[in-house]
Image (cartoon, rainbow, N blue to C red; front, side, top):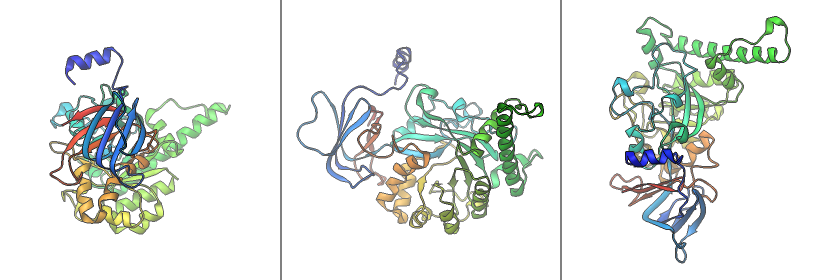
Amino acid sequence: MRPIARVLALWLGLGGAASAETVVIEADILHPVSGPAIANGRLVVVDGRIRSVGPASGAPPDGARVLRGRVATPGLLDAHTSVGVAGAYNVQADRDEDQGSGSHQAALRALDAFNPDEPLLRHLLEHGVVVVQTSPGPASAVAGQAGIFRTHGFTADGMAIRPVSALVFNLGETPKQTHSQNEAAPSTRMGTAALIRTALLNGREYAASRTRAGGGGKADDQAPERDLGREALARVAAGELPALFVAHRSDDIVTAIRIAQEFNLRFALAGATEGYLVLDTLREAGAPVLVGPVMERVGSPQTLNASYENPARLARAGLRIAIRSGYEGYVPRARVVLFEAAIAAANGLGFDAALHAVTLGPAEALGIDDRFGSLEPGKSGEVVLFDGDPFEYTSHVTAVVSAGEVVFER
């Protein structure tokens, strides 16, 4: 959107709201994801929501805007990325994903650094990604609070689907390397795990002390001073807010599960580069796995055993998976889950499961599948049109509809 139009939209209070027009999408093959593919399919979106899905029959509704393509899918979701807080230019001005002052950053919120004008958001949108869970980066053991956002809109608050969606914990090499350089904790994996446990215990005690004081406790049980970080940790310890553990090496994955079970947390795992080595443990834990990036660079010992077949092996083991792009420390700072899913599809996952892993799978993992992830009546109008197989590199996204608004046409 041109700057003048954007300012006008903000002045009018539109803020990225759905268009009121009726949009009709017709495709040679339409993939609802929640059911079998539909040949010669038609989908109708009215006032931002899907009205009907099925085989095309008769003429489109009068006055509707009609988009046609070879293949239609739900809008894609990236279950874990730093886009929005980490920028394309990779300079200090747009690097807001990591707060380097310490390894305990529970009070941080991605919402407060989310840049709606970040070019990478448009880059993802033009590749069909309509929703992202944006997270603080990998430097701190307790990294901060992720949020779920649309990739199209005018303000961070207007684009926020869930301003706070999870509290992020990082295990493995990066937290200990980051802070050991400053002779600060943690400098070992033991230190990282201990820091996370201590933080969760503090959060639990913070909640208990405030409850005691609120319930008419004795004078020595008065509520502690308000602490934003401990508030977030208390919500996690109480099961109100999910924990997201980022771990790559198999022993780090097991440590994350151990901590989550010790504190009875509602949690998901992200990364899981060596997940295929601990399938039984993952299956018993039952948590969603936000796997990837599939084309993980072998850039450190914890990614030495990266495999393109990891998503397929996790899926065959019966795990709930979603494909994520993760965090990149180099330009252009963003992977595209469409391409990551394509590689997974070609390496054992298959078309249907790969599409599920970037649509309904992440929507379910993020708890927003009532609105996103599949093409069903009543859900938000999020649709991507392609001129060929979505996972073929020579195919293109030809149009993207978000909340019933045509936000991109090739």
